[in-house]
Image (cartoon, rainbow over all chains, first blue to last red; front, side, top):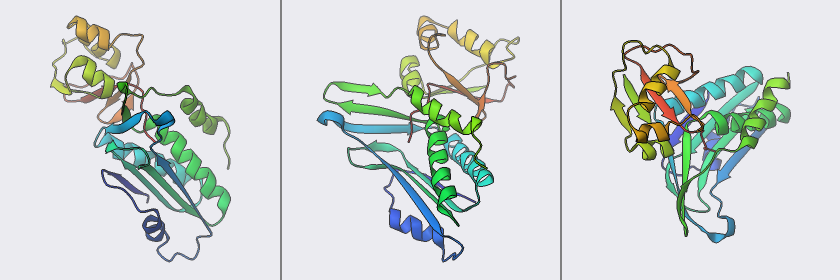
Length: 153
Length: 83
């Protein structure tokens, strides 16, 4: 069962790894991914993340359960922040644990690819030239679709 | 029927959430959106077919041919940009 959290507050990567491990000595590989707020060219003041409370948690749980059925995971954590963030802030954390690294690496990538195109979050950037909603990227849909045609198990 | 809008669509329509009773013949998601477009120029522009929109019914993604019930929670929003 994955740990899912949609929260305003920051997360502590080391604490999340410790929580996931729970002294489980079957774990031989832990992969973490942290997504952070970029400031390209020094023009971003802040970024506000809006989400759909209720659906977001459901969707993240669905994505995690798909990953758990596809790889032999021994732990899975997804934390996503919402609210107003500034450059350098953490946005999202993925932690996957398994016996061997292959499953942990692949599952972490899979979770991020699905999260980016399925989890109902929207980013609005505020910068020196005003505010704008971030547009969805075609590459994100392509990143997700590679998992459909290339089963790894 | 409860209708919820998010992000740029919420701003374009100027409303986060509303209760809407669609005409009796409204059966599917695409028919609901057609009716909403007919309400005003603001709705017509916000829900223009050139815009990429996604729809969730009762917090699960739904296709245009999804059949609606009167008590459904229908969310309409632009493509997501989390992560």
